[in-house]
Image (cartoon, rainbow, N blue to C red):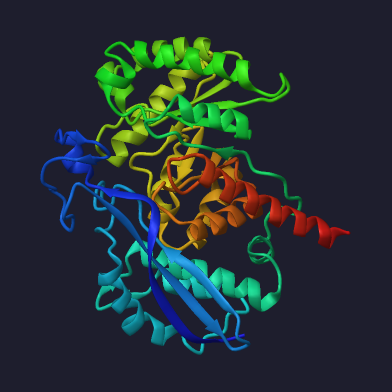
Length: 414
């Protein structure tokens, strides 16, 4: 099966592009937006509508395969590629990349995906969002050419797990960390609530007291609203380095505080994402590893999740090899080609480190569906409900796609 045409359309994402540098410099809120001038190149406002590009392959039998190019909420920050604007990048896809794809065979995924992921145009590698979306379309095309699910394509080409199971779904609350928890419990999310603890004084507390109070409330709310005592949940909270700020990155103080959070969360398992941010990759690996070892020495079972400075396949490999975390967030758009998501999940599993197929609120329904197929095929330990911050929509997209794939796989068994 060959590609006979490549068509692009401009799209919206499930959230927004935010100028992280401007926000960190103190930009104030005005309703749902921010006041002040942007500071990151490409931004015209501190918060602006997220954009995507749907890349559609017309196949020789008339079928159309597609993937969505999308980038993270905080584009242009932390060493990431610049702001991804559709009008700027559609001509690049149409003029520079499409001619290299038309006429290509799509009976297999891996080789063509790796070629696109490493493609050089005018001396530069393609924007991560472009690699992300085009490789999604390649996977969908291979699925259609072989008349199997995208998950089965991955299983067949990478020789992944033969027995599939439902992957725990992780939902994120945004700032509405109370009402959205109710939604998560009622809908039956497995891992919750993210909580967006990104400010010491207002969300963590100068001594961590506000987060501790929230964890107690969270535990009690689950016990009050869950359908039965058999329904188990994992508490996963992203603190954006604020614990390190509050405790001056003192390993022992952070360890003691996490021990207090463990008691507050009991009987539920607790994961803390990004406890500190030391502003560089090597330092982050060292700090996380020290904290993880200190927790083990005190038999504190809080799991640490790596996020900051763990963006690319190379970063993920380093964090895993150094055993710097209990779980790695595989931030899917930052990896470029989705072939890197596959490699990352499998590498984490091979080394006994938790594999969290994550991403961003600023993706699309299509990228969420395709990432769900990959998570199933590779046996990820949890999968992010995305896009958006409203819980219901992202959870629906991922939950329904997961059950469709599993139902089709079960049919083939019979």
